[in-house]
Amino acid sequence: MISFQNCSVWYGQVIGMNDITVEIGPGVTALLGQNGAGKTTMMRLITGQMHPTTGGVSVFGMDPFANVEVYKRLGYVPDIDNFPEHLSGREFVYRMARMNGMTHEGATMRTDLVIGEVGMADRCDKRLKGYSKGMRQRIKLAQAMLNDPDIILLDEPLNGLDPIGRREYMDYLGAQALKGKAVIVSSHILFEVEQMTRSIMLMHRGRMLASGDLRAIRELIDRHPHRIRIQTDQPREVASRLMALPYVISAEVDPNDIEVEIRTKQPAMFYDALPGLVLDHGLRVYGFESPDNNMESVFHYLVEA
Amino acid sequence: MHAYVFTSTLKDMLRIGRFIPWVLLAIVLGLVSLLWDQMSRIPVGADQYGMLVRLIVYRIVALAAAMFTTMVISQEVEQKTIVYLVTRTVPRNVILFSRGMAAVVAVTVMSWISLFAVAFVMLGPGFLGESMVWMDMLIMFLGSVAYTSLFIFVTLIINRAMIAILAFTFVWEAFVPILDGDMYLLTISTYMSVLATHPNKTFGAVAAAIQNNASAVNPVYAWIVLLTVGIGFLVLGGWWFSKNEYLPREDAE
Image (cartoon, rainbow over all chains, first blue to last red; front, side):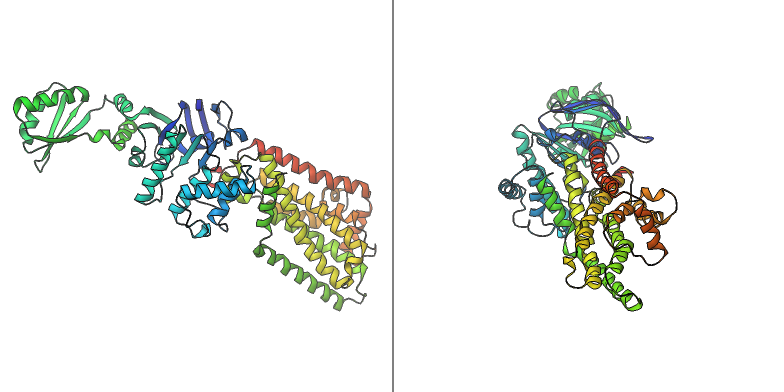
């Protein structure tokens, strides 16, 4: 659906996007990176607000810049929270519907529908200037869904939403992805998108650090030690047994004597060997987890690399 | 033109809060006209009406155009709502043309209020029976088209264009029409004065200079110039808006 070919964007002397080649298809894809990573630049290229300095972008096989054929099939939730504040939420969404070429009747019907879908039916007649950040996020989503788009782009969409709102928002996006739509969500908060998808693109200072499934990306960084925490009431004995394994680099006992953290470059082999070790030596292991499966860790590994 | 873009923009531009300053300005102009009448030994009438219109009321067109053209695109950029305009299924040049025409209507309406105030004082309650008032309304409409199109184009190519537009309105348009030489041909107000059908009688050096320069221009030429500037810059603006990036202000810098 979306294709970047050797795409670079320069803002004067500053690079906003550096030679990115990537394809994005249906499903939820998370665009991750810190502020200034190039996420919004990427969104603006897809939505045809900007030209790349070099390289090309295509959406549905077309150049998206100012292309109304692309906009007919694309919904965009920008990161800005500015609106024509004198309008109500319903008036704003209706206005966007009319500017998408709908008739009065069509726009009215569609406005009611999308406002209901985003959970704003009971609050949409208030003026936008009185809206909370979470309400603004919902109204932005409503206007993006007017055309029932095939591609939905959301720039930092979960900012300002309460936990229940986040859950509803994420469920809504998940349902859209199940319909075969491409949902692209940008965020700098990793745990947010972790709950939505495992398909990620990691950006840093305009570069694409990695893209694909989170686990596949994790394999890319396996040259960095992988940490695994094992909960046990025999931490020292477990640590000494684990240190005997050739692929365990180090083992560190928790000061409270309730867990051991080991570091390995071959986590798959370690996970294979662990059950046998526990059974053979009668070790009491109550659980284990890998903090490195958390996106925050993956992100830091890649950035530091 | 996209009818909904035009009507929704016009509705925004003619909100009551925006109307009030122009009504107040018209009241002030009416009072100035009254004061003029009190201080002048010349009887109030068509002569003084014509001079006040050329000296002041035509300037209101430029001032209104300066205010309303910023609402077409540049205010959307400043307020960061431009993203909602440029990602719709309406082509950019149609958006610009529709919003530009809404600005023309708003500028015309706001400047007519001042015209009516001056005409009411100078010509009496039956001022709409005077053909020169109708001609002034037409000229001010043409002036609105020319100023609005020019200023829209300026807002498209210059960030924070208001300073340049106000300088053009209050310096260039105020002083160049009274200069010797041919520079007055580069002002819009000159061509508006050319088309005016007021009595030729003038009072004071400024009015005489404007009248003198205006009388040197063929009225047909004035029609052509005003229409060309109006249509030409609107078409140019539509093309420019379609080809260039318009991002929320903080990102555009």
